[in-house]
Image (cartoon, rainbow, N blue to C red):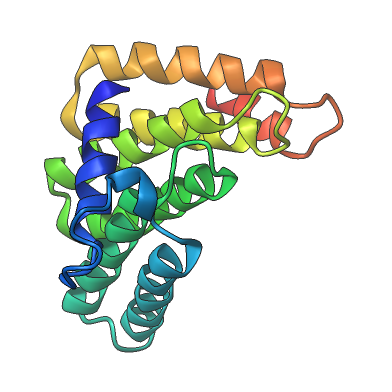
Length: 178
């Protein structure tokens, strides 16, 4: 948590104006506004749509960079952060499917794990975040063979099953993943 605070403060300092009237402001005086991180999300959405139309990996890379910039500015207590981390994991997974680069799948799991961590137990999306994390751990196990990924996938997927309502259509999906 302390490391995230340092990163957040550093991000806040980057957005301080170079105008001398604001140079004496503390980072708390200028926390990122939603419009600042929303502009990065909009840019990411545009690049992602261009990638979907043209298939140019550079557009996907730009979308990922924009989403990461936005996420870095969203406070942990903002409900949008978990959603955007979840979205980032999906976009980086698309790149992994093309590249099969270990770094990409590691980044997918890191984003999905953080999204699940930030999602309150009472949130209706909790089971999806856990299920997606479990599925991604399973993919990494199948591709790279680390037994720890298999164990983690089973633990996380069991948790997804436990937090999914009995009549929810995804409960069967999570059960079949076990």
